[in-house]
Amino acid sequence: MAHDTTRRDVLKTGLAAAGLGLLGLPEWALPVLAQGETVVPFGDWPEKFDPNPAPDRRLFDTRSISGPYTPKDQFFTTQHYGHPVVDPATYRLKVSGLVDRPVSLSLDEIRKMGTTELIAGFECSGNRRPLQALIGNGRWTGMPVRTVLERAGLKAHAQEIVFFGADRGKEEVEFRSQKFNVEQQFGRSLPRDKAMAAEPFLAHSLNGEPLTLHQGAPLRLIVPGWYGAPNVKWVTNIHAQEDQYLGKFQARWYRTLKGEMIDGEMRWVETAITHHQLKSFVARVTKAGNQYKVLAIALNDGTPLKSVELKLDDGPWQAMTADPSTSAKYGWKFYTFNWSGATPGEHALISRVTDATGKVQPTAEELESKKTFLEDNSQQPRKVTIA
Ligand SMILES: Nc1nc2c(c(=O)[nH]1)N[C@H]1C(S)=C(S)[C@@H](COP(=O)(O)O)O[C@H]1N2
Ligand SMILES: [Mo]
Image 1 (cartoon, rainbow, N blue to C red):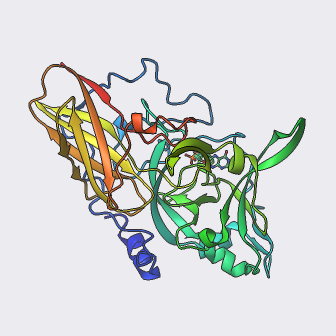
Image 2: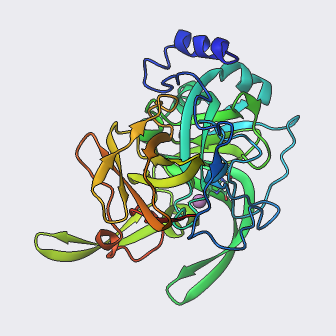
Image 3: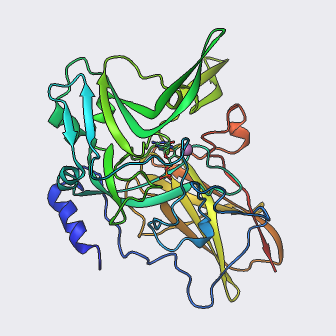
């Protein structure tokens, strides 16, 4: 198999022991279509689906999944300020602020330092029904963030680590009755302990090839188990500071407003977008003869999963089967179900995932108190018509 060497390298570095890159079994075992197998159309899919709504945006049609890792030219992509120009020859990753030794690394130096692998999937926090097209899964090469932070040496009072992309734009900052127009870089922060944990990763390659411009070349942050927004692309600066970072995409744009019953009282809670909420959805239905096969995708914060179940119309919940090719802790997981005896007409297929702690994916009704559309992990009735 093509990836044997890289896998052995991973084992050698001990990353696997740190829980970073659980290795898949035979790749491409699923879900390539068998001969004579066809994709069943979704009844809730918009008639006009444009996978490239803008030059710098791409949606991923999960019905075209061809393996556990999303190819670079199919990986969904989005960002706020378009693509910045980054010259690989003069590129430097700088670590500044409350550090003992400010760092400035060239791409060559980074590639030499960053040879470990991480399997991680992520979705945009705005990913939701009916498309569920802002999701992907990759095999990333690079190094843990803490490798770079240790080289710089964080000072004792460095509590907040901010990651800035090369992309920038003008933003209006409101202060009471005043409005200010200021230029800012795309930025997201991690608390010191999180940044120094085993997971956060600086990636220069996807599926064994250098990142494309879409994916944040030459270097991007991956926070395994977290939504897309914190995965800062085109990272040029890491800044250590004492105060909380309150940039637009950290503190304002990506947040959830949700009602929660606390001590018998409805409290309105505002939170930043961080770790994935437990989610699954029906990604593809295929047909071979009279046999139908349902593929569901599950993604969460890395907590082991207990089950993914499928409900056909008003039937009982039935267990789906885990696909062994997607077993990495932070990667997406495929689950399949052999649907025999499908009757002609329209059907609603709903999946729900339960994790090892007993947490169950919520229904849409259970999520009703969430006012903002981000973090929609509700169970989705997927419509298919059997001819
Ligand atoms: N520098 C930078 N990084 C960014 C963004 C951005 O606008 N600028 N957008 C974020 C958001 S909202 C998402 S969903 C992911 C998308 O990553 P992708 O294009 O590789 O799929 O990048 C994140 N990282
Ligand atoms: Mo996003």
